[in-house]
Length: 434
Length: 184
Ligand code: HEM
Ligand code: FES
Image (cartoon, rainbow over all chains, first blue to last red; front, top):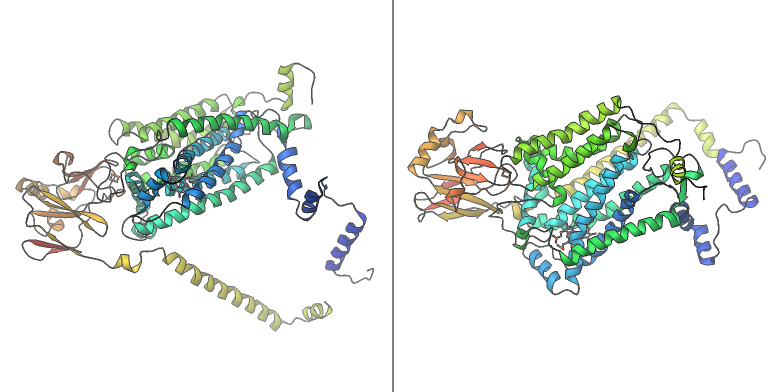
C-alpha cells in the first residue's frame, strides 16, 4: 500500500477501509433491532428523526406556519380519495356524467368520497393561498429562501392545472365550457395558436380525446406535485424556517425541537381546519358548486353566465379586464408568473412586515385588491365591473412592478430585535426556561 | 490499470481526434434517436385520422323563413344559419367596415345575401354566442352577443365590440340546390 505510484483511486479505497476499521459506525443505531438493521442500510429513520423530531424551529412561529403541514395533508387526502374515485369513474363523453352520478348514488360512500374530493380542492387552495400570503407578509421568499419560494410557485401552477383538469371530468356544462374557454386561451399565441389548441384537444373541439387526456393528466399531476413538495421541503430544511420577526436564528435559545412543540401546534391547527372542512362537506357540500354543472355537457349551448371555481376568479377578472385577447391572456398567466420574480423585485433586506411600516400597508391593500378582483371575476362582463376590474388589475401589477421595488428602496424599516428570543424573553419577563 | 494509463500516455494526435469523433458520433446519434422517439409521442396527441376525416353535412333550408335562424352541428361545433331580413342585409352591407377590427365587407362573407352562415364559436375564447333562439339577446349590433366576456357581433357576424379579435368564421359551404346547403 505504500508504493510510490498508488493511483488516486486506490488511495481513496484505502481511506474508506481504514475508516471502517478504526471508527465507530457514524450512524446512531436504534434500540429496536429491526429499526437499527434498516437504518444501517438506509438511514431513512435517522433522517426522519433529524428532520421531523429534532429539526430546530424558531420558537416564535405562529399559526400561519401550520398551513404548509395542512396543505401537505390536503394533498394526501386528495390523492387517497382521488385514487378510489378513479376506480369508479369512466372517462368517456357518453358515460362520464352518469358515472359520477353513479358514484353519488350507488357506490358505497361514493357521495362522501366525492364531496371530500370536490370540496378538498377548495380547502387545498385556501390553505395554499394563506401559506403564500404568510410568505409575503413575513418575507419568507427572501434570501436564502428564494428557491423554496420558486418551487412553491411551481406547485401552485401544477395545482391549478390539476384542479382545472379535474373540474372537467364530471362533464357537466361548467366542465365543458371551462375546458373550452381555458384551452382557447392558447389560441391567443400568434401564428401557431390554432395548432396548439387543436393539439390540446386532439380534435376540432373539446371532445372525447380531450376528456381522456385530461383524466390521465389529472391522475398524474398530483404525483408530480408530491415530488415538487418533497423538493420544496428539502430546500426548506437546508435553510431552516423563517419566523414572524424575520431575523435569522442566532443561537439554540432561538429554537425549539420540531417535536413535540411544532407537531402539537400543527395538530391543533389541523383539527380546526378539518372541522371547518367537515362542516362544509356535511352541511354545505354544494356551497361552492355551480348549479350548471348538474346539467350534462352540451357543445351547442354555452350557459349564460360562466364562472370558474372561486380560486381562479381573481385571475379571470384580470383576463376580462383587458380588452385585447392576447394581452388578456398574458395578464392571466402573468398574474401567477409574476410571483416567481417577487424575491428579486423586493430589494429590502428586512423580511418581516412587522418591521416594514410602509410596505405593510401596500401589502394589505394588495390582499384587498385580490379579494376584490375575485368578487369581480364572478360578476357578469359588463360595466361598471369591467372598469373596476381594470383598476384592480392596475394595482395588482403596479404593486409587483412599481410599489415592491420602490418601497424597498426608500422605506426606513423599524429597528429589528437583536434575536428571536430577545423580545420573547423580554415580554415574558420571567427567567428563561429551556 | 497500467495498460490504460500507458496507452493514454502514448496518445497521438490521430487517436485523440478519433476519440472526439466517436464521442460526437454517439452524441449525435443519441440526439437523433431522442427526437425520433419524442416526435411520435407528441404527434399522437394531435387529432387522429378518424377525427380528421372531415365529414360534410347536408342541411335542408327549405323550411327556413325570413328572419329565422337554425343551428346545426358540424365537426362538433355549432354552425349558425340565418335567413336575414331586408333591413338586416342593408345594415350589414352599408356598415363602414373598413374601420372594423377585422375589416371585411358583407359580400365577402356571404354566398347569397339572404343567408349568413358562420361557425357559432366566439373567436375570443370559444363560447357559443347568443341570439339564435332569442332575438332579444342579439346585442347592440343586431347579430350575436357572447356573454362570456362581452363580445358583440353584427348581422354579418363581424366583431364590433368586446375582446374577440376576429369575425365569426365562415365555414366552407355551397348550395346544392334551392333547398339544400352542404357544409364542409
Ligand atoms: C392535487 C390534488 C387534486 C386536486 C386539486 C383535484 C381536484 C379535483 C376537482 C376540482 C375535481 C372536480 C370535482 C367535481 O366537480 O366533481 C376532481 C375530480 C376528480 N378527481 Fe381530483 N384532484 C386532485 C387529486 C386527484 C387524484 C390524485 C386523483 C386520482 C388518482 C383524482 C381523481 C379524480 C377523479 C376520478 C375525479 C372525477 C370524479 C368527480 O367528479 O368527483 N384527483 N378533482
Ligand atoms: S368567449 Fe366570447 S367573449 Fe370571451
